[in-house]
Amino acid sequence: MNRMDAAQWQLIFNPAASKFKQKQKAILQALNQMHIPFQELSFSKSADVFRLVQEAIAQGNTKILACGGDETVIVTGK
Image: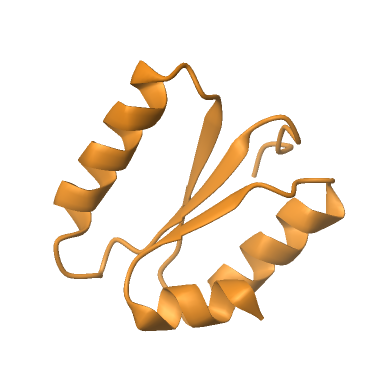
């Protein structure tokens, strides 16, 4: 994984979540229109979410957006 930029939003997407592509497209489009820098992170297992969030925080990121189902949000918030 590339080093995360602390000035960016870290977007954690669950590609297995229902309506994933629709949500992802709308969020990415809005961020691009507002010129907000971001890095997309996706995962395949819940344990990956926790690891991605911990890595982002360890690198000084405080702007993390979870997009998926209930489990994605719950694990991200731990």
